Length: 382
Image 1 (cartoon, helix red, strand yellow):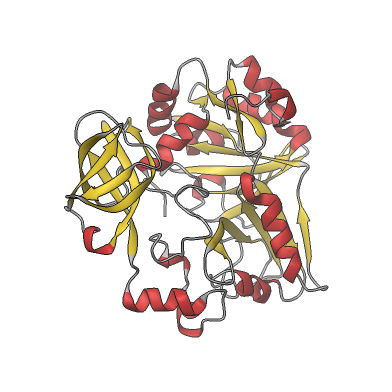
Image 2: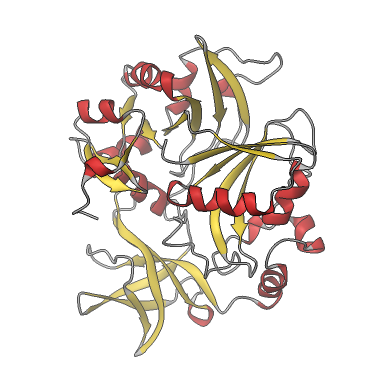
């Protein structure tokens, strides 16, 4: 990707701000995005763990689903319980192919006043958003409307001081009786006002830390980002630290740890198949996925901690003795862990915690051990 002309890429609403702050721009998901700022990836990672980091994730796809039967339709394309999803609650789920392979992972929020809801806010990955929208519209009944919110930006404020920084803005709730910013719990949502801007806020993120994701009109995001960055607790964070933070948290990245060839159980995402759906089925690939739940998958996504300091990268092969038993899908040095860590798919016979394996890196076998994920403790407010 290094030879891609940045001028040919789409730009984020905060493109000018990233450049003013010294962001090094790289291609990602068809956009020019900051991979790091002058302080560097390690410093940005540790700042987010200790204080509050501001991420521009406006490349993500933001969708609005409206109409009678919206919850029922969501249950035809994903394995979550959306009929029972309560108002202002967010659920992680998976967009599935007919054979149960993962087309994307997404966040779904019931923004209606009741359950089952008829209005949902959906966030999908940036690299897959156009394919996701096309896939959804192929089965969308005429009574439902799916709107791509292309005029909206999305920010993520992450870290233990994110709550203090965002609460200091004293954002009034749009609706009476709605919890204040500081009183929200993990995977809940609310609407707030900042001047004449309406903010849709969820207490969620992709770092393993407490924090918020904030959707607002792109025309107003520069002023809002400037206000957050004026707070000494908040610094801008690029893609490099976002990747190392999510890796330490054991969170999969679509296109690497999740693909159409991988089903939810082997990915360690069986929790995304809600209890009622496990009993009833009725989602794409249900037979394959329910069989994997019953019998166990042939391979599993596992965490690996390597000896020494050299990291293993995506594509590195994993061995048990002379036998190849898996492949690394994400890897790097974990700044908070103080050691190289990786995620890999390995044969289930070699997936138990404590199993000693080897990873081949540049022709050399590096010792590694299967360890529980996350590598670094998550700090969600539940």
